[in-house]
Image 1 (cartoon, rainbow, N blue to C red):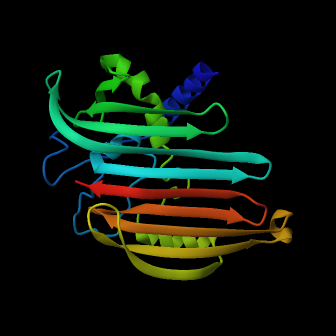
Image 2: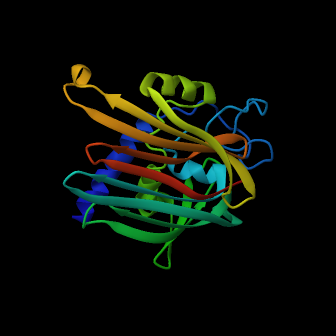
Image 3: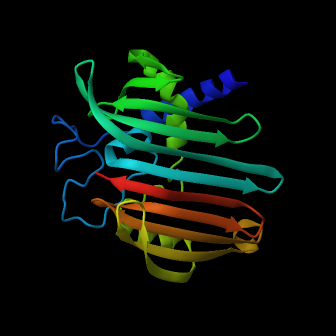
Length: 257
């Protein structure tokens, strides 16, 4: 069963990677001051969001990250997943400058879930060049299978929830199209690990009428985002509806470069 799950995750990652296009080519070291993967090319453009579903590229954006997700639906047990990573050093591996991270992850979609710990070294292109699993080092092509489960869980961060929302203007347009009632809009201060930052908080309601969709349902959504480094990051999403479905994504800790 575990081999089958791993094979499915490989196929999912291949499909995701095939659909991704990197907009800008980085010829210089991605860790040079002023240019890191994920940063806005225009520092004056203060309304941009980090793109979701980035996997190992998240390590090029943040020194530390910890997040968790929960999902439950009528007649389906709760599904839980989460991951964390922390920068612990910089080293030269196979002639490449790398950043060294310690990582944890877990995914329990059912009784066949898994969890793990590993260390990973990524180069300037956010590619894994070395990994340490169960006290053993792997390099080259073997790093792919070693980081597969971690990458799959990392892909869940902001997955689907904020699709095609890359700026505050696009967020407002998305809300106008999708949600009828804004029940609450507020701001608060929170520390994600590098000092207090302002968090924008929204609560929405959408009534789905039987004449439009052949059924009645009330959708409720909570969104939060904060400026983390040069861009905004969605830090919380809670979705629930009157039929008993529930989905939650929460960033507990994040530290930019």
